[in-house]
Amino acid sequence: MEGMKPQPVKLHAQCYGDAALPPLVVLHGLLGSGRNWASMAKRLGDRFAVWAVDLRNHGASPHAADMGYPAMAADLAAFLDREGIRDPVLVGHSMGGKAAMRFAVDAPERVRGLVVVDIAPKPYAARWEKEFAALRALDLGSLRSRSEAEARLEPAIPDWAFRKFLTTNLIRDPETKAFEWTVNLGGLQAALPQLFQKGIGEGESYAGPALLVRGGRSRFVEAEDIKEMRRHFPRARLETVEGAGHNVHFDAPDAFAERLLTWFSKEIGGP
Image (cartoon, rainbow, N blue to C red; front, side, top):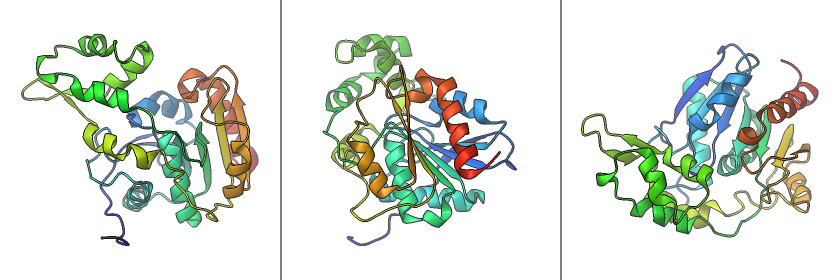
């Protein structure tokens, strides 16, 4: 019913680093998972307790019909409560960045700092329909390997790295050994119009420390978006990592980690 609070699901997460260190909670992008951040989490694990989360309908987390940003924020609140995580720095990439922004404006008192990676608080043109159609059309019953899946997807998805990223969502059933998707493809495809909306409303803001990291080769965050970002996040600092695309943490891990740690030291203090 309209007006009802979202029902949270129990998110799966992996923690890297000593739990006594300052908590840093990472939210991945669409069709990703916490595993996509494992390398970066290990890199930062001597400075933070890095929690790499699987958002609903992704990875090992439960599937659910609601894929709105308020539902993702409710999941995050329940996760922080369950794990006893207080005052985390949130790091959100793409869709995860919008979920992190949603949580920060909903519960600013629970957020020590916000890092948004290559996404802006604005609506985006709908996309990914062709890719979702190709993934859903894949005959999993006859599939023998991930490499075979990549080959079958090539006509619809010519980018090799993107195909490899998408097929990380294929796993084998432990009993039947047949391939299956970890992601809720149907639910996510239905939610695409919702996911590409702005994610936060006019007048909503978070006054704490914030960092926006964009890739120099990406077009997800344009120059005119910076003003809009600072309307909602007045303390936002911008860092552009030249040579990096949308997946800044993959394309330039050294530069990404350096920018995050420098920001944390200057804006928050330590570790």
